[in-house]
Picture 1 (cartoon, rainbow, N blue to C red):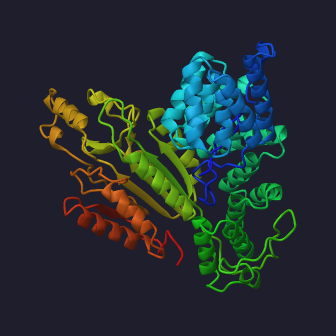
Picture 2 (spheres, rainbow, N blue to C red):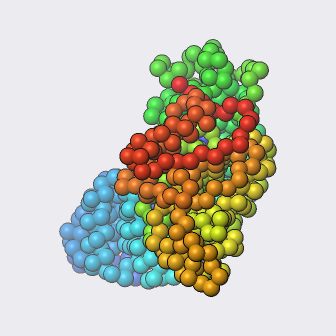
Picture 3 (tube, helix red, strand yellow):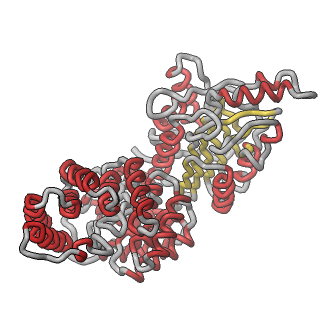
Amino acid sequence: MKCYFAGLVLVLASLTAAGPALTKPLGKNPLLQPLDNVDPLSFFPIGNSIIGKSMELTRSGKAYLLKGDYARAISDLDEAVRLNPKSGYALASRGVAYRMKGDYDRAMADFDKAICLQPKYGYAFVSRGVAYGIKGNNDRAISDFDEAIRLDTKNALALANRGVVYREKGDYTRAISDLDKAIQLDPKNALAFANRGDAYRMKSDYDHAIADFDEAIRLDPKNGLALAGRGDACLRKGDYNRAISHLDEAIRLDPEDGVALASRGEAYLRKGDYDRAIFDFDAAIRIDPKNRSAVVRRAEVLKLKGGLPSAATAATTPSAPAASPPAAVIAAPPSVSLATPPLGRRVALVIGNGSYRKMPALTNPVNDASDVGDELTRIGFDVQIEIDADRVRLNDAMSRFSGKVEGAEIALFYYAGHGMQFQGKNFLLPVDADLQSSADVNKFKLLAVDDVVDVLGSAGGLQLIVLDACRNNPAEQDFKAKAAAAVGASRDVSTDRGFARIDTPSGLLLVYATAPNRTAADGRGRNSPFTAAFLDNLKRPNLEVRQMLNRVQADVYRATEKKQLPEISSLYVGPDLVLTIGN
């Protein structure tokens, strides 16, 4: 994962090999920006003293840093630090140069010293926060950005970068809020617009995403993040022609952009233009042979074509890649009309709630949802993902998802987190759920499974609900004990555990992680036992969906030593459907 931070030196934006319809942020090459809005050295006269010479070398080193000449920058800054070991400005600038060269240990050492010497130097906190973010330590990064903002509430660089890290963590609401403030303070920062657009894209708010990408491109016509993001947003909206046009621009700017090539290949695939899709997937694989998504999608196209590669494909197979054509844009071969129809539209809403505020937190749901979202994206779903969602965000997510479901070949809802039944009804718990009395159990404070069923009802084909919930929750049991003791309450309300059975409407496949009235294990590894089995079987190609779920059921039963048996409730009588096509 490459990370880029906005406005300071880099913009954090993951350049993933996740392929088309990405569920992770996009990114492009690092862009160099001014190191400070105000040069602290401008307040001091440059004289012939040792301190003056150190300041002169610091300014010279920063000039080389801005030019991208990191070796000469470090050379001048080494001498500046030798002359004045207590210069936080020289140390922080040298730390940035080391970071740009990928020497994170030396960079962090310099940032630490700079902060120790000058604890009110906000730039040093921002610089160290960027380094933590690049290394994937998002919590430490946010802590440093918080301190920089505490020192200066109008620090646009800290606000923008904190917003980017929140986006990386899946907290898109906070990300957009911080980037809003950064843009108000610096309305000409193209990278802030591009990153806010990417956060909107991750929330499936494609219209706002495209508007931000457009503004970023207006400010910086060579902004690769915005060009690729705009194409992906159009792809997710189903506007394949515009997606291809925008991705053409991104590829013209950078013919070696494997992510943009894979996305354009996906657009061609969904149009049913399989030869052009294969050509782009081949180019993406040539650039990055480990691009698993492009490899899998290429195999799926060949499957749709009956396994017979075209003449154009034969020249660019991964085993014998052809050289990249010299043209600025990798041109696709002429379209070949095929009888095989394009893949049907497949949409998914994936929710992972673990950071509960009024009840025990859960370790795995965020991992579970992230991994399921990635895998569904890889196999061609348009995925909308929500992490640690409160009731307001759940309402918003369900509203946006309902607009995608109508007419979809497959509409899938996946939930990991706390769930419960109460008086025969099943509920999913947002992270702000507070169970004090029976009045707190209603569709306005919790998400009723019946409402999820209603939303999926407009799909044109399979409706699949996967619930990895009902993990052990002492707060739920305390609540039910109180409810049972209330006047007129059911005598057995406090003993109901897990989910209750519901009537399954036609076309729905409903999968519970465990049997009704039982609890599911959260697990000790990265994923719960149920989600681990679900992911494992989701990766197995050419399994009909009911056969795949039966395997999940058996795998969980074995993995938990017969303590947990998933239940599958089905009234789907449509044609056989395969979630993962390939070899």
